[in-house]
Image 1 (cartoon, rainbow, N blue to C red):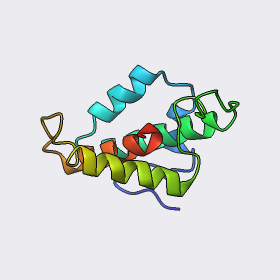
Image 2 (tube, rainbow, N blue to C red; image 1 turned 90 degrees about the horizontal axis):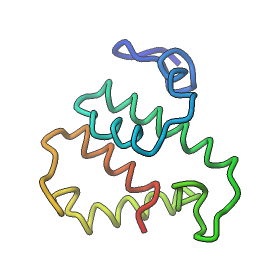
Image 3 (tube, helix red, strand yellow; image 1 turned 60 degrees about the vertical axis):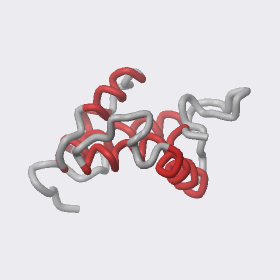
Image 4 (tube, rainbow, N blue to C red; image 1 turned 135 degrees about the horizontal axis):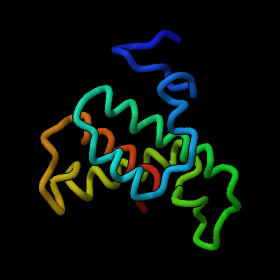
Length: 116
């Protein structure tokens, strides 16, 4: 897979390798809040992918989560993301909605991780 716009593919090569170390919840949230364009969205998505892969190594908790991940299937992930989009009017509530479409999509992915 070829790199686009100076970023490496999402397969843990190049740019993605910097996310291989564990990121704290606050660092992931910082990465989410830093999304303003395609490149920063890709960095966030790479970090989320690393966190997801690491969560698969964790036992299922009493709350049904693996780490911060409540949704283990693509159906559950998309259902949660869509529920967040409907409940929060795609980020307008509790307000204010981001003016960056890349950040809105990053928030959609973030919600798919654990929104119930």
